[in-house]
Length: 189
Image (cartoon, rainbow, N blue to C red; front, side, top):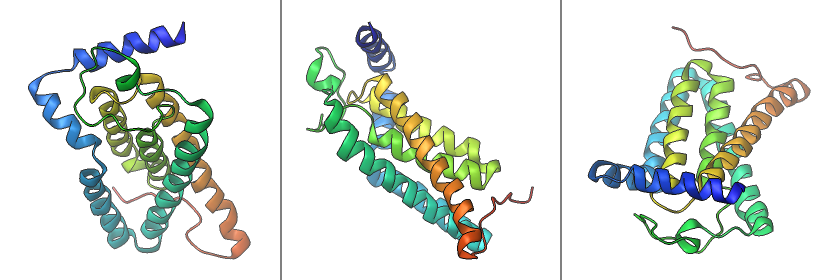
C-alpha cells in the first residue's frame, strides 16, 4: 500500500510540476555545486555577524550534515536497498543522471534538514528560511526524478533529528568542557 501511494505521489509531483521553468530551476537547486555557494555565503555571514556563536553554528551544521550523510549514504541506504524511481518506474520525467545509489533515505534531504535544524535551534529567526531552502532542495529530488516523496520525507525527519541532536549535544557538552557559546543565540531584530 505505501509503495503505491509513494509511486502515485511521485508521478503527481514529477509529472505535475514538469514545465519549462521548473525543468530549468530544480536541476540547479538539486545540484550541490550550486547550493554550496548559498551555504558558504550564509556561513560567512553568520561568522562575521555573530562571531563565535556564528562559527559554532557553522561547525555544528557541518558536523550534523556529515553525520546525516554517513548514516544515510553508508548505513540506511545499504540496509534498505530501495531502487530509485528512475530505475524502478516507467515514464519518469528525468532531468539529471539517475545515479547508481539507492533511494531511501534521500541524502540531499537529510543533509539540508540537518543544516536547517541546527540553524533553527541556534538562530531561530533564520530557521524558517533554512527550512524553506531545505524543503526546496528535498522537493527538487522528486521533481528531477531521482527520489520518491517518502525518501525525502524520511530523509528530512532523520536529518532534522540529527541536526537537533548535534546542536543540543553541543549545548550539553559546553559546560562540561567549560566552553562558551553553548547557549542558542537570538540575533537582534
